[in-house]
Length: 545
Image (tube, rainbow, N blue to C red; front, side):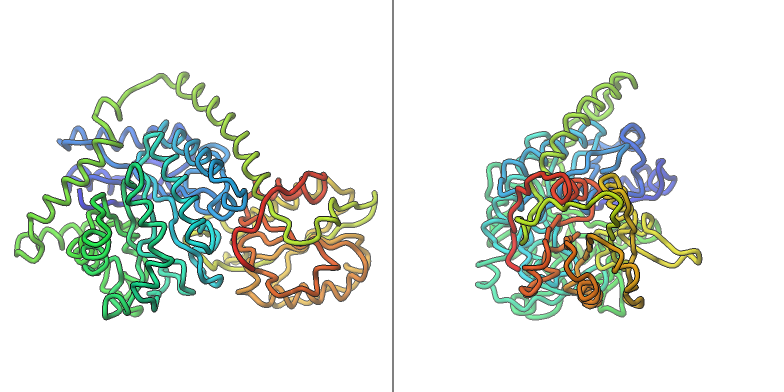
């Protein structure tokens, strides 16, 4: 019961069967790699639950998924769940009730396919605009606003029978290091944390109802703990701060222990198996290991050995097990609940009706999230017939393992990574092409120069940026384009974080700057409706730039 493991493939693998049958694994996480369509997910969840029941499990499995919406949407696809705006885009609507409606709609879809645990909301306050792992996954840079939206999302999920999980305790927002790659060190005192990072978590754990689970992150807080032990492995964070001082008695789950901050010795990590034991010793209830079967088995064996030799007191696991059982009773239900069988026709009909309704909500939410940072008076963009528009989109590798799907990127003929958002930008190009007679799509990169001849023939430009505040070459390329473009209209699009052009006041007169807060197809559709069709941008900026 004290582990949540992932597996590979669109069918139930032999590895996960073994873990459930032979090791009595009580919790499973589904990843984007497991999702093909709604019916397929429903079938694999039902099979997982059937295996657990046949293997003698007392209670059904908790089936979790990373469904924050926006750029972290493991269940969203045209054939599966509805794509909804992510955290910063929702905050840009200025309306926490939209966040509630979106999370409730997401919960209904997940419930239909048997998923009962979601690793959301993100309760991190994005204090550092350079943050490579949180960024637009946060509701903003003010703790009060993050609290409003995270609380609305948690209530929406809970109201529809899905257990939420506030993450990444005690706060991953004030760092420029990605814990997927290394250990972030946050140098803040207890009073500083209480003023910012802990505010949303405190509200969620004392909410009505208290949030069902909290995810502990992999970051060091030496001013609080006295050393660089990751929070996920530190008793001073889980047992002392979260449990004893803040009074939380729900389920605590770790972030994935296969992240380099824990797994990689070269980054100071102790290794996955040792990390699993140390996280439980620190006070976590559930250790998460998402990918590797050998590490799954090794983690279980390491913990079992620690119980046998007295290193991990069995009584602590019993107490922890009661918390897990309580959450299962509330959100997983009983065997009759999880193994109920409706006909394929009934499921498909109900799913289609729900998806149709949710797609309308999604469209409304995206329309309300789009923000014009400057240049509203220059919209919509008018391009005369037979005049050429240039669309520039950046080529760049991943800045964020949590966001970029390594299996869904564009690669060159040699298989090298070409563009981690390429498919989305092709979708944007398709939408723009529908609205102009002649368009040329230029994929620009750090090692290419601007073709003056191409620009001289253009009558309008849409220039897309992606986290250019951390990829300065995009700004340099943009400046070269603007130098050549003279007096033609230019729309600048921040397709992820809105910090791209902070301090660029000299561009205000010449350009329009629009933020979508994510590079999803849905966000780009809202963009072209404002940029070309005359729709009004209704969003506001949820962070300071």
